[in-house]
Image (cartoon, rainbow over all chains, first blue to last red; front, side, top):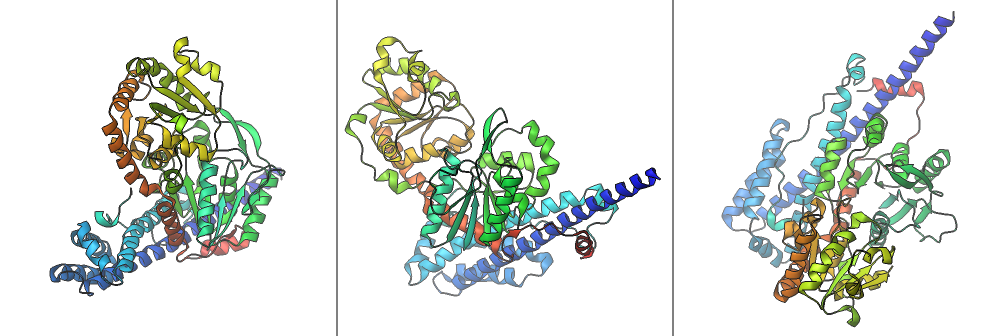
Amino acid sequence: MSTLIWIVVALVAIGMYLSWTAGRLDRLHARIDAARAALDAQLLRRASVAQELATSGVLDPAASIVLYEAAHAARQAEEEHREVAESELSAALRAVFGAAEQVEAVREVPGGDDTAGELAQAVRRVPMARRFHNDAVRAARALRRHRKVRWFRLAGHAPFPLAFEMDDEPPAALADRPT
Amino acid sequence: MKIGIVCPYSWDVPGGVQFHIRDLADHLIRLGHHVSVLAPADDETPLPPYVVSAGRAVPVPYNGSVARLNFGFLSAARVRRWLHEGTFDVIHIHEPASPSLGLLSCWAAQGPIVATFHTSNPRSRAMIAAYPILQPALEKISARIAVSEYARRTLVEHLGGDAVVIPNGVDVGFFEKAEPKKEWQGNTIGFIGRIDEPRKGLPVLMKALPAILAACPATRLLIAGRGDEEEAVASLPREMRSQVEFLGMISDEDKARLLRSVDVYVAPNTGGESFGIILVEAMSAGAPVLASDLDAFAQVLDQGAAGELFAVEDADALATAAVRLLRDPERRTELRARGSAHVRRFDWSTVGADILAVYETVTDGAASVAADERVGLRARFGLAGRD
């Protein structure tokens, strides 16, 4: 009889531990969703400011076309091409705003100071949001690789989380601080 | 934005983390945010209106020294009440891995949590043992901040994951505008720090001093900080002791004036530094800086571009560099100019904007902070079944 009681106690304890782990995993998935939403918002903000600048007529025609192309592609990219398109926008921004003179030229036109500020903020926040997202992904992956999670299928049908890999190096003239 | 900040160390004991939190709270309140700081404090200590006491910290031996920590049932209850009453949009925990309020609030909260890692201690045995316990609490943190590239590297090595680097802030204007004091000017070397803490490096400076005085006899060394003054000069030849002046503990105003007055500020620290705020303060005040080449210091000084570096614990190298600086006013002027330009990135206007950017990034697309209610078994199975 007492053996039976011990078996029941052990089963209940294991059950509670598994349920707690499932709760942990659920919270991690929620954190990834929030981080991904934030990353999306920052990427969109960056592409919008870039497009605004490209169509403003402040830049020379060649720079305008390069920037417009990249910003447009980044906004329209399918999910699987998103990382490449966003990396290309980073490269285009670095090419256009590589020199401090170009940033100064934008700042001098009426309202340009605000736009330059918004762009500086956007290129600063994209790497931040991406780091937070990938950090959440790493934590979830570490837990999901664990035996208990795999054997008891605690992750349910949630897709295996993927990091967002892109080149997010900001233009030097816009990021005058240590990264 | 409603921001809750958790301070792990006693508010009544002065320290780098406490000052950082105080300045951050002041800065955020000036910008119109609603800030509440949860900190351990004695009940009698007068607290600023934005600080909520989490009870008295208990001194316990931890990690090789006696640390004042908060833990136990009562502290956990206070954390929960603070979280519940605050209804914060984001909470910012400092030192979440130390077994104090930081870890408790990490355990008790859910929602957008930002954490700043200040220290870069080598991995301790306790940390390795506690890792399975720490991990579930630490993985709730939505955004990690490291105070230097060096602190970030240790964090990545010890806990995995990644962090953004946002340096500690300094009110550059306060140091820039300080009035130099006549009696502290003219061939002076400055040192600020605990005299009896060997990691602050005063013994190295004392060892270098005879060589410096032999080359530049008019030099005076001004030392500000707590500790036994007799013992500090014991290694010096008797006739040189008059060249050393002890100022004792000094106020923030006097610290700024001292840094404005000296010809060279020396930071001979031998370790245990993850940032080096004093170097930023010295540069803000326009003092030419000579520091040991610790990773953290090298980074703050832009790998030697904004101040001179010497090999750590090498008294001869320190003496050579100090003599060279004292004899070369042009180089000092150059360092002053470079330092003043370099510290702009550490000013609260820049640092505060970056920290706010982190808050805004994590609150985008997330609910506000709440106490993490322990869910019933049935609800948990319900959650577990969800996609």
